[in-house]
Amino acid sequence: MEVIHLDYRPGTAGWVLRLQSRLQASPSDVLRTRYSRWGEAGLADLAIAVATRLSLTLRVSFRLAELLKKLRDEIDASGDIDQLLTGGFVYSPKDARIFYDICVAVDAFYFEFRSSYEVLGRFVRTFGREILGRSITEHEILQVLEAANCNRDWIDPVRENRKLFFHETAPWIALEVHQRRPLECSVLVMKENLHEFDHPDKYVTQSHLVNTVTGFQQAVWAVFGWLGKEIDKSEAQTQSSAS
Image (tube, rainbow, N blue to C red):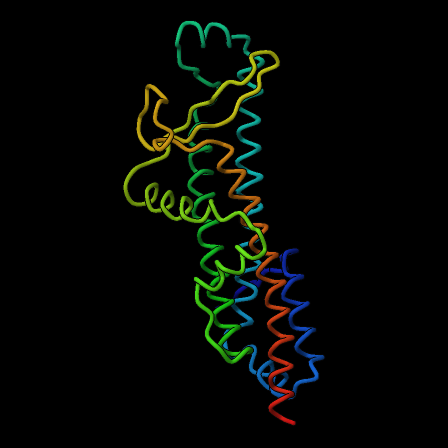
């Protein structure tokens, strides 16, 4: 079989290089020995998986934003905004595929952010077991986020919305208008075919999507910073035991 390999070097991989450099230069013989099994323990693949997932979260976020801007600009240029809102009419775009492209982007958004969270958790647990010599639970990771004052409100909704849109229904979109001219609007992701928006639990706002992006980014940096401190603790413990 002839195969062309592709150059996967995500720009988000800097964090793992810092961890690796830290372990390579560790004064602890124990940690350096554990690090020598980095690949064998599965950490090499997990690290590149996390880095790739981080890049994918950026791509799906940018893609969704691009599509929403394109739709907003088209509606704004149509000059139909007053008629649409006053008459209660639906907007028909020049290319109906944009609605479905946005729905695909919404699905991808929830899939990638939840998957990234899960793969990151798997890396941290494996790192704890193979490098730090102890178990790390999701509860401990959540405590790390709390101690770092990271927003965690996005975690449960991302999990629930991914399950909802992947297993139970499809996402539909509408636009909430904040200003008519120039048009300023934000997306509403409906969990069912709504005619009224009286129940916030039946739709997702764009602010929730933004909150997910910022909350996840905060969580990633908090966890990586915490792993560095855990290396410090492990060094102190192993060196103390050796003496």
